[in-house]
Length: 281
Ligand SMILES: [Zn+2]
Image 1 (spheres, rainbow, N blue to C red):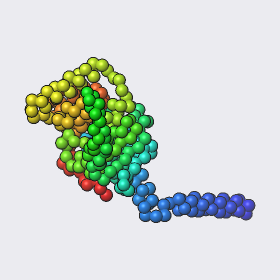
Image 2 (cartoon, rainbow, N blue to C red; image 1 turned 90 degrees about the horizontal axis):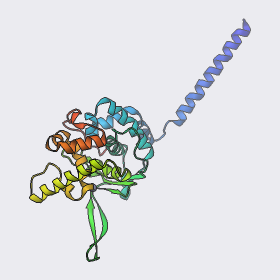
Image 3 (cartoon, protein in one colour; image 1 turned 90 degrees about the vertical axis):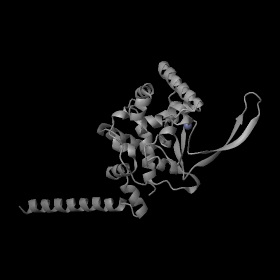
Image 4 (cartoon, protein in one colour; image 1 turned 60 degrees about the vertical axis):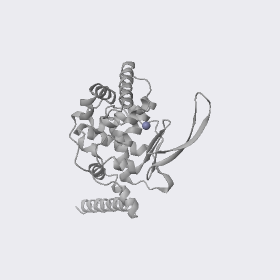
C-alpha cells in the first residue's frame, strides 16, 4: 500500500513538474513588447476577420464558401509576400490585410494559389512619380518624362500601390479599385494565352469603348480603358467586382466574358455594404 502511495505521489510530482515546465515555456514564448504582442494577436483568425469586416467592402458581399476560401488563401499570401513601405512608410497589419484580401478575392474562382511569381508589394503613402522615356516610332526621338501613378505592376513580379488610393477605394463602389486593377495586370502577364475566342470578344469590347470615347459618349467604364487592350481588361475588372450588376446590364457580353475568365459571378453576391471604416490605423 505504502509503495502504491509513493508511486502515485511520484506521478503527481512529475505531472506538476511537466505542467510547470510547459507553462514556463508558454510564458517565455509569449511576446514581451506591446508591438510584438499586437502583431501576434493579429495572426489570430478572429482579428483578421474583424479587419476584413471593418475595412474590406467585398468581404461583406462574398458568399460563405468564398469567404472560407479567402481566409485560407489570405494566410498563404501574407505568409509568402513581403510588403515594403516606400520612404519609411510603415505598412501596418491592417494595410497588409486590406491589400492582400482584395488581391486574393480576384483569384478565388481558381483553385490554385496564383501568386508564385509575385516577389513583393511596395506601398507608398500617396501617389508616386515614375521617370519614363518614350521613343517615337517614326522619328526615333526619345522623350524623357515622368508620370504620377496610383499603382503599377512592374514586369510580373512586383506590385506598387498608393495606400491613399487603396483606402479611398473602400469608401464606395464607383468602379475605381487600384488593387483589383494592378492584380489583373499581374495575372494577365503571369498567365498569358487563353481562349482565342475570348480574346477576340475582349478586343471587340475594347474597340467599342474606344469608339464610344471618340464619339464623346457617356460611358459606364472609365475612358482610361480605351488606352490599350491591357488597360481595358484592368478597368473592366474593377467594374466587374465593384459594380457587377451595372456591368451585366450595360455590357452583358463583357460581363459573361469576365465571369468565365475569373470563374466568379459577383452580380449574384450580396448587395454592397453602406460603409466600411477607415483603414489607416
Ligand atoms: Zn493599368
